[in-house]
Image 1 (cartoon, helix red, strand yellow):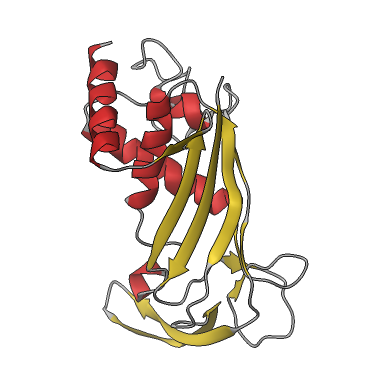
Image 2 (image 1 turned 90 degrees about the horizontal axis):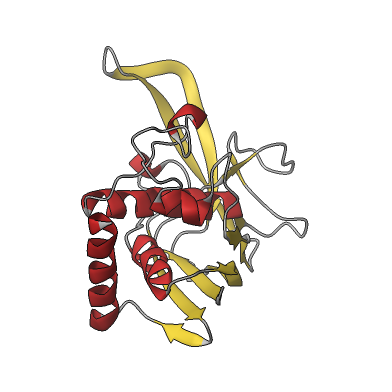
Length: 221
């Protein structure tokens, strides 16, 4: 199958907090994830999970049946509503019974700058602040014009160009990354550089048209 490669740049507009644990040297209760060189990272698992969820939403909106992760009993081939497993999403991202055709790599931010953001716990039933529940969250420095990047963030072998277009559409629908999104963290824009079968792939008007026609064909089949 033709080779697919995507370079991904995530440019935060606010602080980003992708939680790690066990990091020393900070007073934060929730720390950001770092690599062995202490650089903040956007882990491959975050990119894969957010992208899969986004692609599922797009495919379901087009009227195409998909299985219902993360429960293993509701994913291909266990989901009996999928008559010809794997579904479109599992054929890309995999399931416990199907290997993924894609590989994901961590995105790295070439900076050690971070910020500490305070937060409080709320008792939702009564709508009041919980006593003795002040916590500190470590984030990337907001407004620093730094970014997460990997020239080979996503690679794999895709049978159809339209599969690559679906991945691009899913990525461009994601506006927030990391945790604490309800507190305003994680807002970001992104830039993609995608190639399939040695062709540059872009989600322009022609690309959107090709993707729409392909999804219609998938519905009919």
